[in-house]
Image (tube, rainbow, N blue to C red; front, side, top):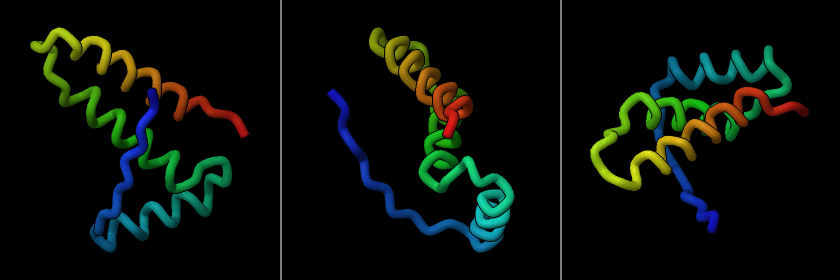
Amino acid sequence: MKSAVSILAEIPEEIHQSLKSYLESHPNWDQDRVFAAALSLFLLQNSSSEAEDSSQNHRACAKVYLETLFQQY
């Protein structure tokens, strides 16, 4: 089952400008793809492996991260 989480977040102006510049120079990427890659990488790097279901979550985050990076348009 896939569930969606809607995110509305304020980001610092410097990050906004950097993201805008990146997206202008990388037409195969969009804002959603960048956020999915960044968030999945953050979760991979900061996940705890103590819970039994954490390995499934870790694999799921890894899958999203890799699919996002290597997505072709």
